Image (cartoon, rainbow, N blue to C red; front, side, top):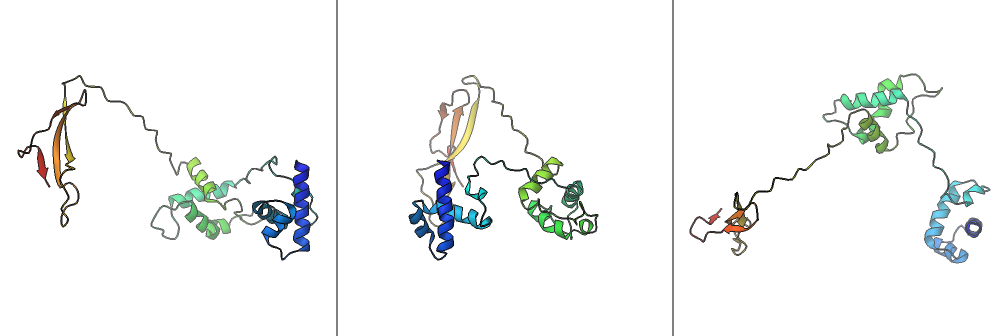
Length: 209
């Protein structure tokens, strides 16, 4: 199966060179593949050398190299800028703001070169990498895990709870309040959730707000 795919990719590269004015749909019809296949592989083929044969192979089994390591001085500077915002910034800078200020940081620009090269931040192009650094250094704390403890169940007729609810049978005032026009007071047994009392409209059962 892989051999057929490689042949189709090679045919796509050849047709794209011979007919640069063809649309993706025309190329897809010529090699018997979908337009999404053509779109995906045209991008890969154009990024590779014209005689590169390795690009014709699938990348599914290829190992993804880890991201380059970050110099400890850069990590330290990220933490410092987080704790002391630069340029009189009136808020705590997030990952995107730090990526904006790092290339302009005076201390990094005046620092010693790394491996014979000046300070560079090629590995900090994603805010997620900066977010991970901030969390590892205690600048961003994870939300504490919430442990819910169930309330002790009351015995029947031991406790009565009161609750005001909107009366759905009372229409809202078109030129006044739209919600909480009339509220009904319910008395519910806490142990069984049985409605114990709902007094009638004597002035004690509801209130007009």
